[in-house]
Image 1: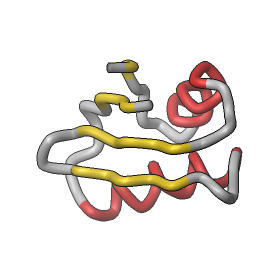
Image 2: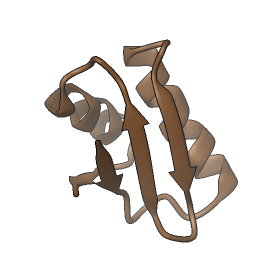
Image 3: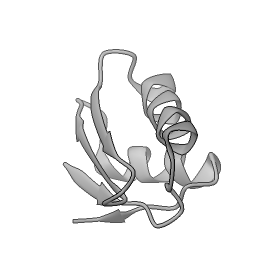
Length: 64
């Protein structure tokens, strides 16, 4: 699944986004692209749970 995260603008943001997703699913594969403000996630967790975790971390996401 892929998300657009407008507030992810730097490497530090990308690390926070990755940490939020991995807190939900430690086995998740996360590819963050701060310049494009996109993150690609391979996980068994439901999309809604990922979006909720990102919002709680301060990075509201829109599914693409």
